[in-house]
Image (tube, rainbow, N blue to C red; front, side, top):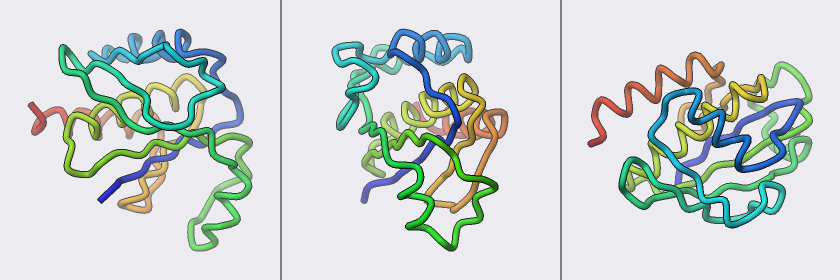
Length: 139
């Protein structure tokens, strides 16, 4: 089963390098591949979590379309951008990598994290707590 997370924001980062700076600022041991330009992300984004090769799917989704397609979700506003993350639920390293990357992206863009599994919005600070929780049981 695949899992999803979306980062809603009104601004975007301009490059993988800028995103990596945000990840490093969080202190996360995650290194994103910079083989593709940020604006061309569509599909699997390889990364290294500590020394392990892992990754997650990453998409520039259409914010308006996603908001309109989910009338049961209480959006606090019409966001301009959304970055979608998808990974296999059975892959713990992918789970952790996606949450780390998403949390850093949300903080850097002053956005929010929407956890599809729980149907819940989180601030970047709240998402950081989720990352810590995941780290405590993923080795």
